[in-house]
Amino acid sequence: MIDTKALRQKILDLAIRGKLVEQDPNDEPASLLIARIKAEKEQLIKEKKIKKEKPLPPIKADEIPFQIPNGWEWVRLVDGCLKEIKRGKSPKYIDKSETLVFAQKCNTKYDGIHMELALFLDEINLGKYSEFEFMQNGDTVINSTGTGTLGRVGIFFEEDNPRGLKIVPDSHVTVIRGAKELEPYYVYSFLKLNQSRLEKMGEGTTNQKELKPISIKQLMIPVPPYEEQKRIVAKIEELFAQVDAIEKAQNDLVELKKIAKQKVLDLAIRGKLVEQDPNNEPASLLIARIKAEKEQL
Image (cartoon, rainbow, N blue to C red; front, side, top):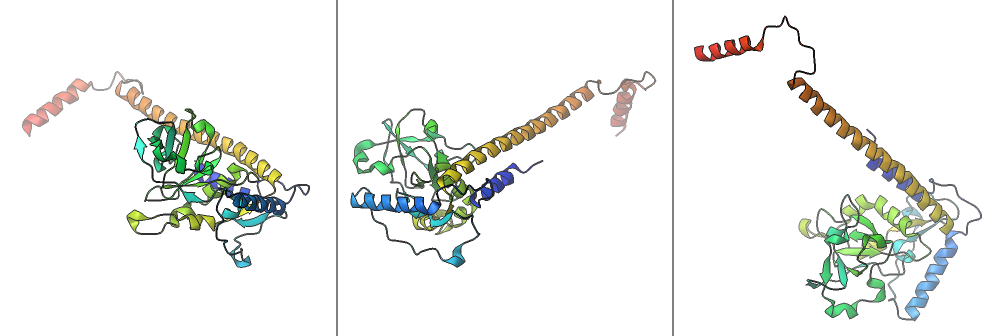
């Protein structure tokens, strides 16, 4: 049996190392798109749409975990995002409203995002939410408190919200939204690959561990040129579809084996698995012997 989980991890590992698709020397280098993100953030700060954050120390050579292709850039995750990397607010719930709350349970372990598990927000304090705090298509979500789900990474798409309601994250979820120069699924792929690392980054006591925003902000992400990001995402989706097919075939095989075993046992107890021999002593005689033995005992 093929370990499909390990196969997906390998695909993501190759992707962020620049080994999944070929590089194109005609692509605009990532340094230019990083410069545009920086300029856009400065403009948004000037317009007071986002807060100016305390700058993190520059990346040192001994921090870099592996070499990346020419045209790529290492950056802190925070420097690739316009939206502040932070947890949501503690909500007050109500029976019905026009706003949903994205909670940890919505980011399921095996089945992706399930907004039918979300509760409704009491909108009395809705005015305290800035436009950046409402969830958008392609947001990566990280469960950030507690045990069992801490560090779990998911990606939110508009189709996960068939009711079309506004959604805000609660205080146990951190939302990552890269600038438009970063493909959302590439950012998600990087974080998904590092999920086990995120799970270990929780701080605090066993039952009160939390993944602090500063720990996520400091993560270093290798950024390819934008056109290569698109090629990487397309290749990941293509390969993941093949892995899904392998997984389904393996599950079907397991189910088929289970059915076959049940059928064999059914045929056996119905006397249809082997041929009968008329010379065999009839079962009535051995039943009689058992009866006599029991009476003797």
